[in-house]
Length: 453
Ligand code: GLU
Image (cartoon, rainbow, N blue to C red):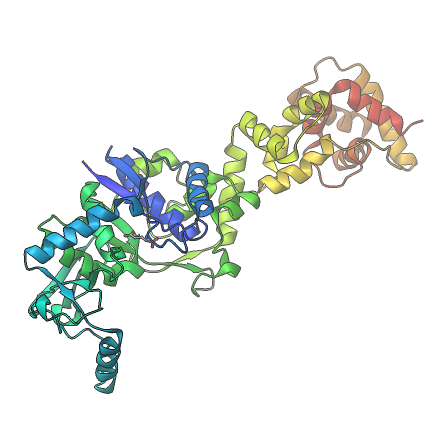
């Protein structure tokens, strides 16, 4: 069974990069009817906060990314991680290192002087711990093979290899007895039965170390896929200016979760030239073969277009519910008006914020508009037609108005702009038929008649 995971560190908000990683792992699991697990990597006690954990939960929920089983908190598994490191020491695959900070510093200086990257020199690799100096708490280091290379068969990057001589004997357990990120990730991935890991390519170099730990523990290695990081529309590294924001900021700017997911999906994965891909299709089509190797760009113009599409497609009741939660309490009669008007509003709104702004048409107090003599004539004529109209639906109203236009020889645009002005006092509105239906016959007549007084 395919088992994937999302393993965020709760040190800040859930940002777009993290959300995309979560989405890809979720889609892979759902595609194969597998499991998608959530692991909170909260071992950095200083920087991990409950608010960040909450932001991860709520961000994922909002995006519709649900996880199986209870989330696992990495810190709670510290003892297990340390026990395994000690087991490796017993087996001769890891060792205690008693270097003092000064010794480590001089190692670094020496490497620097020789033009080499700073690297631990293996000082305690073969030494007997009985020789340990007093007062130094040891770290546990992994014995990385000195020969050969570590090879990663990456689902995205292909075969990538590094000479083992490049990897130093990494620390598994710090001198304060806490396990390192390297060790914890490997043990948890194993214990959770993770089969596939899709993550950002900023983790690629760590992966060689992860592989070495898996090997030392005698465990199978999950399949890794390292996806390129997201860039801004101008190709530069993603910054706040580009939308490197928390997922909640996207919600606050009026984007729908399905549009955000669709946009994230296209950042590094493709299905032919398809741009609009529903959640159901994504689950059906998602695979690791079409993960891209080149950096992807977050394009807000595209996101806005996608959002407009999903706004038009969205269920009216759902948008109505979302809208009410944005605007708070509304009188019952206005609620009904809003519900009748929502279909027209969504056609012309690219975001929930635009929808909310336009919805004010149905909520604000009515003030009779100023009109000229020509406008008054049109209003008068409209009243006589409206009063005798029994069938107050959009289609019928539209065909009636077109008849009137022909019969009275007044351009349709003229009637429409007069009615728009008279009904709302605004120039940009949903279609007049949408509005006539939303206001209802009585209110529409009251408004048109009010300019004739
Ligand atoms: N906790 C790591 C991060 O937030 C992810 C580790 C992983 O995916 O293996 O970057």
